[in-house]
Image (cartoon, rainbow, N blue to C red):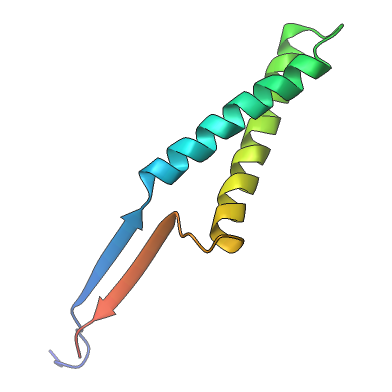
Amino acid sequence: MNSSSFEPYTIITTVQPLLMLWVLAISFFTTLAVVAVLSKGRSWYELACFFLLIFVATTVLGLTGAHFVMGVKWFDVQVITLR
C-alpha cells in the first residue's frame, strides 16, 4: 500500500441553529399573513399549497439573505487534510 494514496482528513461542520430558528419563525408568520390576504374564496387545499410554497420561498430567501447580505454562514463545512 502506497502511503501517499491515503491522506487522513477531518470534516468540521458548523450549524447556526438560533439563526435558522429565527428565520423559520419570521418565514412562518410572514407566510401566514400573506396566505390570510389571499384566502378569500379559496379552498383549503389551495391555501395549503400557497402556504407551503410561500413558506419554502421565504425561508430560502431569508437564509440566502443572511448568508450573502449579512455575511453570516448558517451552515459551514470545512475539510482539513493532514499533509
